[in-house]
Length: 436
Image 1 (tube, rainbow, N blue to C red):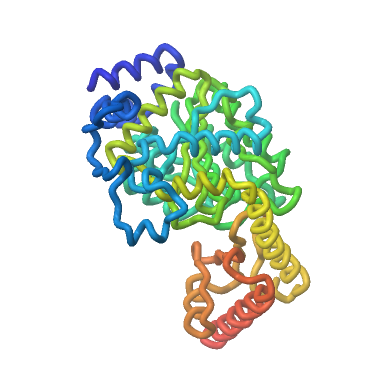
Image 2 (tube, rainbow, N blue to C red; image 1 turned 60 degrees about the vertical axis):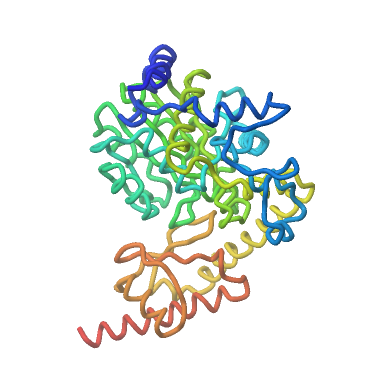
């Protein structure tokens, strides 16, 4: 093991040994190398005459570039586009995101969290967390309604065993008791993923449910378990009514116990409607500022050893957006459009009671999606039939559940969308009865 990794691990052993225990074997090996990038950073600060360090080309004191590209980006300084961004991301952008998190999550008041590190969007952030904390054979706890890519990120790549509990209890609320029972069955280490608003259902727990989740995690930690909680906040901020908690569950779980590490993975992709920019963030909470610094160093090591750094132009674009006086106005405008679409979905489902013959909608109050449980129809059969006969695209989650993204359907088309789905489902059901 490299001496730098040993030093980081020794810091964890002294500050909070539970954090060290929760690291994967790879996580223990990780460190940020003091090589070319470190030396280049020193030269950038001090080399006033000639800076012959980093592998970029310059011309007339700025990053060399093609004029035909720069013409389309003339509002930006070439050095904010073509040069490498630091492995942790542009520092002003990191600080802007940290201020945003603090402002929007009042429960973080007085709690230590790391400075967000820029990732190449959410999937990359989740992959970093998997590398840091998941060993082959570790168990990942998920609700039965979850994003399918978790299988690849944690199961295929890191060989984790995935166990699920029902997302909803009989009252249509978050099934905290189910999570608790599954946690009790684990050994000393547990890895929990919380994704709100949930993909695929669009559900976010309320304040009371959030407190139940915190109490479940706390009770498990007090019983002796060491727990990593990964908070996938891809659709954060898109909360459409008072039934949803209005901040991230991360803010309530931060520093909840010495045996708990909480990791927030979020980004500009969905929140700021910039999917192709691939700008995400990973942020840690643990009881020890020095432990947080170690996790930052190990994260920078992963980034240096994989993508080296996230794209610079998209970080520059997002920083300018967040510093714009129009940022909040634009965000609220887009939020209002999304909320109206969600409200329209609820109204359509409420007004057309006969739809209940074909499906039962799962509770939803946030995010991009809603999900229905079909009655007597295979979800993939309906998906294919809708695509072939009506030119409508949906996603089948399993044999019974169909996901509908109202985020990409205009409000005035939502009623027609559900009517088309209903009519096609009705035809499939009738055909099944005849053939049966």
